[in-house]
Image (cartoon, rainbow, N blue to C red; front, side, top):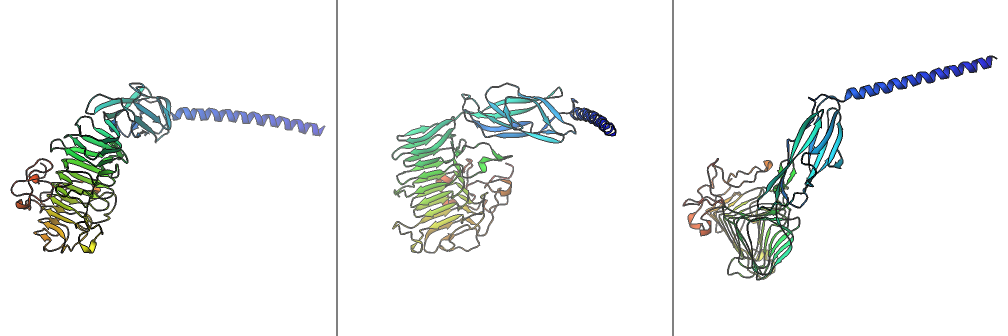
Length: 484
């Protein structure tokens, strides 16, 4: 009887315990639900904020997908923010593609951001052709509906139609007009005996690894008003506000082969290459293999200009910024007049001097049996990070440096004549701020220091079309007062 009573009492206590636990569970559920409801803001004044008002995707080639761009959506409030919808105002036009907080789609609902947290929005685009030679801006609004209030981020891209060239070999004379830019894939080859003429104002964008090889003749006919540009085809930013136009190694470069003849590069910018411009073993010594007039050659992962047993003439040119020396000369007979040689390469310390010589004399013979290097520098500036020249003693060589500004401390002799030694030309360049401007500041000792008798006729105006006058400045650029 006692055992039966105890068991009955135990059963009663178990039932009551279960009832108590059930009540507690219900209470906790209700409390949790109330907590969650209280934790989501419904106030119209509580809105998301954005890292940008307008997501600028920059210049975009039509019919080709863009790199991925992104912005951040912030919840700067102390409660959960529920964005009831995120959508493109113009609907699905097949132009902009979205990824919101890790999910791809065209429209997003009930996207929650925890208090004082954020999410990312990633955007890509493929723009349709616009039929014009100039970029056309394409925009849409990405709308965020939160607590009955609409906020937006503008998506903006400048669509540029391009003429795409893939593995092209030019076998007869051809002219490329200014208009739509050309996008070059793989290679562009000018065959022996053929001439490619590029009109003023044209732009050539080279894809990763692409090269321009000249076995015939290249006439790049830019002008001060309408220069020609040859560069990589990345038009966006590396990060933040740093453009790809600062990056070397975007395409291979320009190679002039042994059968090339009488090429002229005028008012042309060739930049951001892997190997720079190479002129290799052009045997005809009666005329320059290549003439560079008022052109800019810059930013190479190797050297900017390499001349191998060839004749080259460069007048009024900026030749700047490379990992392994700016100018490399091995054999040939070259002339550099009113040129600026500078090295403030962004990605490493200089691996060599600004100007590097080889095959100068019997002491540096490359066993080719070809004539030694002869070169004349006149009214030039040679200044930048690292040494200015690979050889300090040029006695007995065919190298002449006349009336040039040099970084080195030295004295004139038979090879260095009337030079400005150990002088800073005072460029506007500020490397750590990504400014590479080799014009002259007001206090530059290069102003008016040129020798008129040494100035070649092609140097009478500079890259910008400014006349040098009777008291020419040293280097590629005519000085203009600051602010003008």
